[in-house]
Length: 270
Ligand code: URA
Image (tube, rainbow, N blue to C red; front, side, top):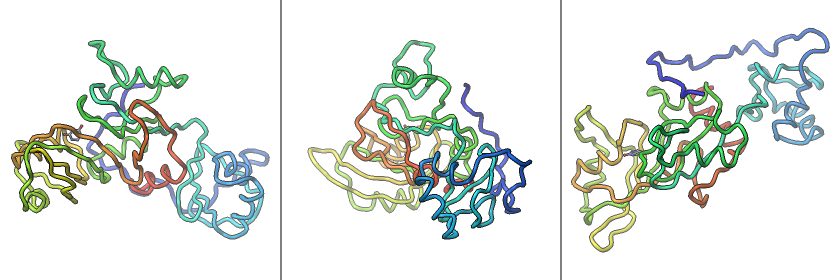
């Protein structure tokens, strides 16, 4: 599947109405407690308790009756306000991309690419796509999914969620660099800034820093750090919004948790 293209049209923030559950013809759809159980929210029994307690929302309305039938392909379900992704065929993975690998699912020049890692481990892995890119020399968190709407929004400039990077840079950083980066520096394609900056360590003529920013222009972190005179030696992306790389080993994949997917949906207004 090709990568979703990015259009400049801003997606509607609220795609779904809050008109409440759609009435399905008798016998169609799947019972709400079963859908919740299949999505890994809770056992069927515990899902019934969640419904009883008024914690489950279907298409914008709290549902307290048991046995409501819903269409998992089209219904927006939230538990305690967090979106539960109930479409069965949606896959959301985190890869810790190793240094030296292309972010793409295939590479015309035969260079090692993310597609090689995925297809080795996941049947039908080639149907996934990567959400944005990391430079070949950048390591860390790359989201892979077949969830086109989520991916589209995560890459859309108007929804850019915060991303955190750990960078090792040349030189011992003087005080004031963080302030300068937060205030913004002029790059060849316009100004850029970071939201958060922390100097973590200075050693042997190098410094380790943590930066958070919410934009995704090409080579943005490398260019920002170049602009303040401290070229990057090593760059790792550790977080995208509510998703953290943690101690996941390079080259490994993991399935995103339900709360992480819900958090990503929330971050992009789905
Ligand atoms: N910024 C960069 O410079 N490179 C990346 O891979 C990601 C962000």
